[in-house]
Image 1 (cartoon, rainbow, N blue to C red):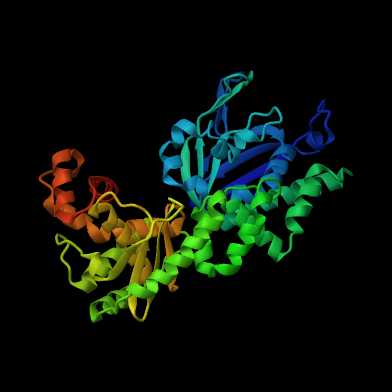
Image 2 (cartoon, rainbow, N blue to C red):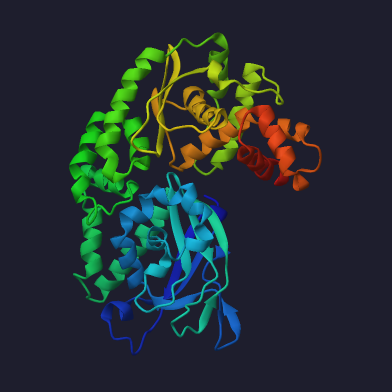
Length: 439
């Protein structure tokens, strides 16, 4: 793993005369945090008038916070959904869920950075911003800023390393049976079934120990009824209070699919064959994989970049309104073809096209037979959204249809191109911003 794709917390133990709490005195340290090769703990010191790369604080509060928030900190991918991310700069320190995954919540009177941990499946975004306390009499001000995607497994390993190091330090000093010892023993002592339940609760946005009890029976029941792939997508999207209703809808939608699947023609098989060799690496940018797959799909279908791609030729659909707005559709791909039961009301053919485009990705590029299209935003959804956008309105086609420089494209031009491809103007603008302007 390249240093530019890692979160690294390093420290050197320091003496702490006058610190009264034994756990703090034993773990006092000079702490430096790096992410993506950048220094998160870069700060200005008002007393010295200089900048430095580290803070002085005990590691015990950090380790205790990591242990207490272990499951939601690492597995609550709901924090990556678009409505939160779009308001991220404004709400990162006010939204209760975002703040819960921010180092600012460590507290204990020490000046921790504004560093947010935002899980999204196999990748986690590490985000930090300039910060100084508006109320505490801090003598430092954090000045760094950045956003880095890190492999989630690496973050989990780094957090475990810190906790184990702090516990070892305490044990060496004869400080045992702390709250940290007990909490970490509960986390690491969970058997496979309990750990799986804790991860599932966290993906529902619930703390498994304090918030998930009233939904436990429904969580377990759904895990037993739904196939593994469906259950994974289901849990990432469903509201805890709608688990039972939504599970019933999935069963009804699966029955409807039996009625609408139509056989694939040779062109659909060619598209699937063209995409079979494309691999999505855990450390890659998922949207780039989606773009590549869409280009291969158009090439296999022999559809020029300025032509409309009619997804309806490949996916048979029927409507059945879902009780959970975040569960948008259920689909299946098998030897008889691809079928989709749409659960969300679509405002126009353009939004429906995009939904069908996302489903088409599952049909030709993803493994497994049954799938859900949801509002979740893990790397899988990022791939499918990018695939649908590039399939329906290719960046190369948009470039040919533009009247001028993409940097100065007019709203009228965007809407004209959206009309041409029968997609939303927002989709076209995203394609311009993400592929043409940033090229």
